[in-house]
Length: 328
Image: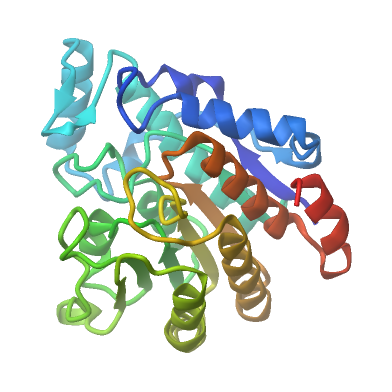
């Protein structure tokens, strides 16, 4: 079964400035790598458009959405924080990124593809209900989760976030409910932005115990991540028994990323992807939607994404062929 892929050159129009870490060259590097290693043509390219406002408004305040629109139309350079750079096209591009997440969710839920990856920007997991944070405007993975529940009638969604930064926005949007299990592996908040994601943050009210934060010490690498996935992440997912698995796929925990202090190898991300994919195969028919978050060294990001994609694309009997395509 095919792996879906969401990408548009329009994502490059979100202009954050040449020196901003979250810049269009991130996607250019990914696309170049996928084409060079002959992965691009093996993907099923999913058509998509901007997210309908009704779905964005389910998770973001209407006044915030309008404020983003007006700030972009006015040519402002930032919104809410100096980290969140914007340009005249950013509002439309952010709606397109959310629309790509919805289209990927549709394709996976309907069985048109087995799983899907969104090479989109701006990222989303820091976006709160009413404010931008950490390069993020609209919370793409949260919108996809809500869409799967409300439109496709799925009962339970698990989101696994392995970005080096804690996804404060995703946690806060779902922390009072248990139909969405949010699991985050991230650099310890005492050492990393945004300073949230401690182990005691487990959800509130009706969402108690449906948030699992796994903060890891700076310098953690493949071994520490593997143990966390096997000992903590896997039992939590098996207990939740989701109908679909969503990934906030940030690759800034890779060894050498300028914004992280971790030592995960590109193959460490590939192992994690394979393991989560196998879990999804056993629990929810393999339904996985992965959405790009961070990753700021261009060469390493492109390598990580290509290995992530080949793991999603692999049938168990074709590992060697796909590894060759990834340049392993």
